[in-house]
Length: 338
Image (cartoon, rainbow, N blue to C red; front, side, top):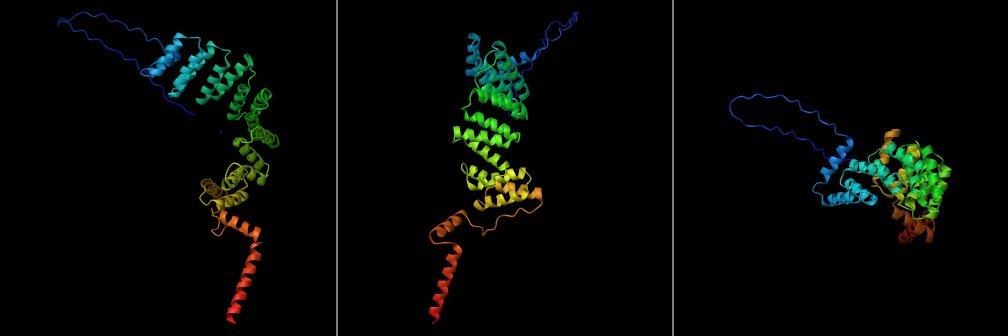
């Protein structure tokens, strides 16, 4: 198999009134009209806020001095913007990224920093517009630019538009497992399940340790009604209770409450305190109007299931073993009675 904001410090101008002491005799005064205040632009406010936010911060002061001494240094500008972002001033950081992008319009590093900054401010449409314009003016050979465009489009629900971006990224780097996973997720959201499963399997072929791709494959298999395969895929990365609960969650989304309830019963038979399974059982009860019944206490635990399998392997079927035991006990009682 998925933002943040903070308030910048505001600086309010203080108007000082000068009182001049004089003699007791009245003096004539000439009325003077104060000049109208010059409007402050948004950019000027950002610069003032940036300066105020950095006062008393040694590292910020050093970084500002470095940018002043090396105005054409992209790393210095990005480092300063990143420092403001880490201190809780993402809006100031984005303004600095914009200024840097205006000064160095062909820099892919600056563009990606701006895009990520806009995304952190939950301004994805602006990030998409900026990245689209950048790629049209400055085509890139690295896959990360098209990949980010696809991710942003996916995050805004534009899966059809995002698919070509993901495919473009794969054309540039077909051996990257995460790119196959990203395309697979896009296809899964478009309900192109066969194509999605193929991409997830390719991602796992390239990186068998990818839990994200394995979970996504399990979701796809569940959507294809391949429930046993889905559980097996989930169980390769998690416990049995979680695997059956995950399948139940997919079934709930599909509206198949009866089958979802069965999977939750199985999950709770493995772990009666599984929090997600308990919540899903409560959800199913609200959706279908039936009581949220827990599995019977007589249901076998995982240890009992293992023990039964062990006996079945070395002794024989449990029913036959019990029947033979009962027969021997009866014979023993008869002998004692004689």
